[in-house]
Amino acid sequence: MTIEITSKIKEIIRRNYNVKSFRLEIPAGAPDFKAGQFLSVSLGNDPQFKRYLSISSSPTEKCYLEFTKKLTESSFSRALDSLSAGDTLRIQFPFGKFILDESFPKIAFLSGGIGITPIRSICKYAVDKNLGIDIVLVYSNRSVRDVVFKEDFDAMVKSYPRLKVAHVLCEADPGFKCRVGLINAGVIKNEIPDYEQRKFYLCGPPQMVEAMYRILSEELGLKEDMVVRENFQGY
Image (cartoon, rainbow, N blue to C red; front, side):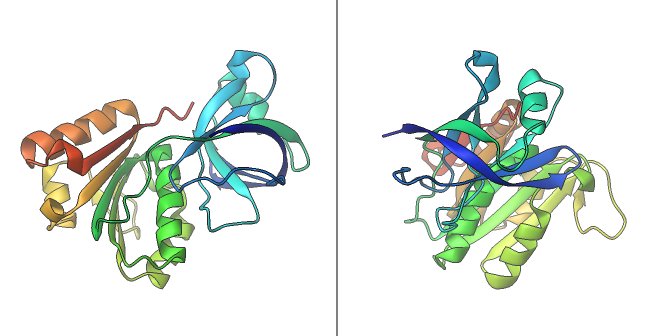
């Protein structure tokens, strides 16, 4: 069951040159959510000022509810970017079925750009709960400046040895460990050699998600029930 509430912004965190996280106070009576779910954010009564955005915090982070947004030239982005700590907005949550199946001992994420937000929530939950699930994340971006949550994932990798993060960039950057190019069957085989044993979660721009699904199903032969998809516009 979802509920609509008004919440105050506690903190705004810049993640890179065009991505910000907004941490909200959690009012009494707010519903629980599952890692990977999303919420709606309304900045006014006009429908153009309402968006559905993934929750980037984990249910284990009890002091705030966080969503993360790529800031574009849209009216919604400009209005959101103008807000400060102490301002209020309306949210409704939780929505969505892009959630972790804890019965699988091995999983993998394929993600691109701002599609990393629900994956950050799921990975943080698995790490904080020490679930023991073996996790591989293959994360694609244009360049290193587009990577979101790098510090968070670096910290998770250090504290949870069963998490591996592999970056794939279109543009190489000296000193940054990555593969150059796009995620394809070869990259998946190299970074996830036991891919046949894993359940895959795909999140990113719709075209990327569909391309990744075709690779997994047509080139690598995975069954449909082994792939969970979430199309993420981020605008």
